[in-house]
Length: 130
Length: 130
DNA sequence: TTAATTTTTGTTATAATATAACATAATGTA
DNA sequence: TACATTATGTTATATTATAACAAAAATTAA
Image (tube, helix red, strand yellow):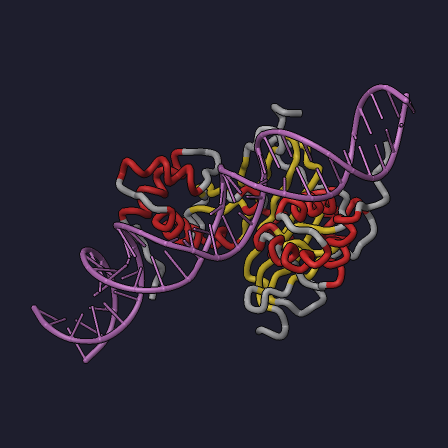
């Protein structure tokens, strides 16, 4: 069975909204914005978010409980994310650094664990906020 | 002014509890456990947790909203954490890998951002769960 | 060693984030 | 068509975290 290509109505509405923002959005701010389109309950939002995360269309910024669109079409990226976060202005940027990704993908610990996913968040001050 | 060395009563109680567990504990499970010691409100727990995170005695596992003791005494480590998380049994282990730390510490993006902290979480299946 | 300052505590209330449980509708597949 | 799967709608509730205020304890400085 292949990965689903077409999104449902709610999923589309919510993905659209997230893609229009270049910064992460929080679930309840999404809910507020989509109420005019008939999405009224948190669960409707969370269900769409779960699905969109699952298929790699968006990522969750774990330290911020917020969701950002993935610009990269390679679905692999859903399982291997790197973000930089400005602790002053809260600007978030997804990082695609081949060497870093390579390093992380190849990382082996000494516990014999099999990794299939990672999430890395860098924190600091962006150029504007330094 | 140097970093505080002595912990307050609440901070000690909560650190003790977290250190006795080799796995991350959630705030409200901590609250439940310390009620017998007279800590009655969520805020008392969260305040102690905030402080303990700040001074590097514990780390927050962001993807799990849980807190784990830091075994490593170097305070630098508070700002540079790597964990492996088993998605089946939820076992969490802090990783200290010199080469990986080096690589992450030296990472520069192309945005001119100045990093002072990072958090990396690897997900997969541990040896027992494979 | 007092006075000022900072840190920690205690407390009540509430905000913000997320899921359970159930019924129904839409979609895809054999 | 029948079956299975996925998505929806809805109400209620669980979980995680902070606001706001008052007071006590510890620290620092004069």
